[in-house]
Length: 228
Image (cartoon, rainbow, N blue to C red; front, top):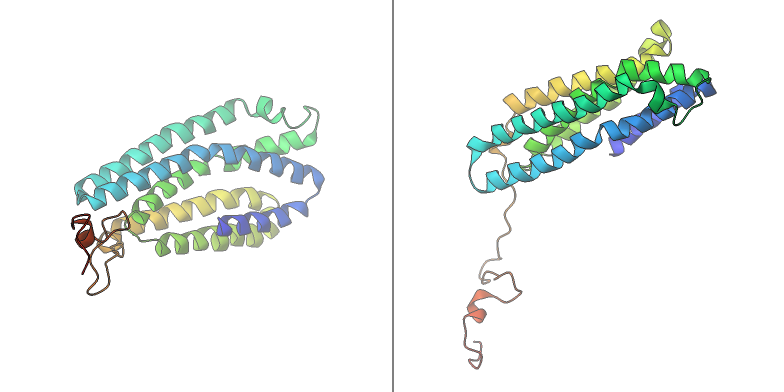
């Protein structure tokens, strides 16, 4: 979340340089994107839990199916929200902006350029959730830093001298494509399947805990039997 917030602040700083109409349009578009991403975040949490349960059960044969189901649900749910935004963009934007505002045209254009990329980013979230279930948390973070901080903001900075403010909107597909490619590569080729969580073990000579705060050896003693 720190990485995503830092990238958002960086892009917002560039957006503000193009005036109040562009800033208003981007602000509303970004607000709508938070709703578009909700299904992917929820699916990612579910996939992570299900994958972790199957890892714990030793059922690695199910992990791929869990990830594939998560990707499928993301395509359907996030895709449906993006499609609705494409069809009803002006009525939805009209809830926040007046219909005669120039910002509504800019916001509609921003959505057409960038909103579809959140379908790709949703797939990335599902893949990240799958590999994190085994304890592999650093590679997804590194991929996110590369794709969101370096590629997305780098594209916005470097290309605005060529295509102007369009570089800001196209930076979102650029970052989403990069994150998906890197996440898919790590999912297929990475060593996350060999990663193991650190298991909590009692110290040497200490009896294992029953989970109730009472060592098993003492729990097995009769109530009136003194502990040695």
